[in-house]
Length: 163
Image (cartoon, rainbow, N blue to C red; front, side, top):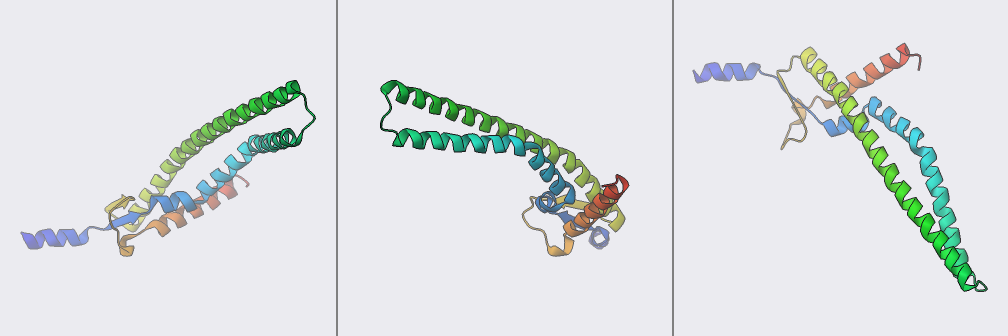
């Protein structure tokens, strides 16, 4: 009985996939990051311009000695309002960017799962575990095979869509 169980266990192929590595290096993910960068760059650039303006206003206030109390109060109010606006927009940008990243990861996660399944079936694996795991030997790590599949699929789709 034990020998029969050992024989069956020897026929089972187990693989491991490092999902973090796939999410860091898959061309679909890299392209998605680039799209988000392009999408959110104008808003970020506006914030950087306003931050530079804020710094300039603060320096002008610190070095201005001939201002009346009313002028100083008006400048401080302008600085305070601009600072609040920057903080609020920066939080909004971070929230929106985080939301979009999570949405992209979810969509790409499904594509990566399909790639893992395709590679596992093609290579004859019975079970594929994904990270995090306590330990996985390099001998069962199929991450590079899945990454190669994703790269090939990305290139094929790019050629088909005329990119």
